[in-house]
Length: 69
Image 1: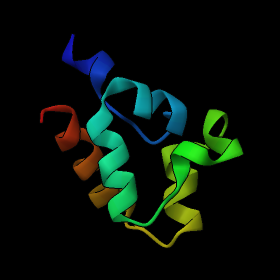
Image 2 (image 1 turned 135 degrees about the vertical axis):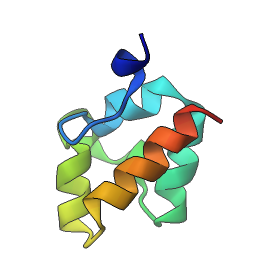
Image 3 (image 1 turned 90 degrees about the horizontal axis):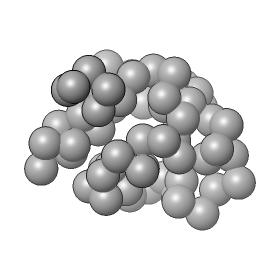
């Protein structure tokens, strides 16, 4: 059950935000306005990290930690 809740590289931003409100807080900390972005339905967490110069592993760690908050 916990595996389905996990955010992965290919998880879309929209799907990640649906998992928990806390995910949006992590995105905001990185100054990412993903909630208002048209690409949220298609853009993956990996694409967001690469396009914004973020460390993908650290970004995923923070997003998944937010799910446990």
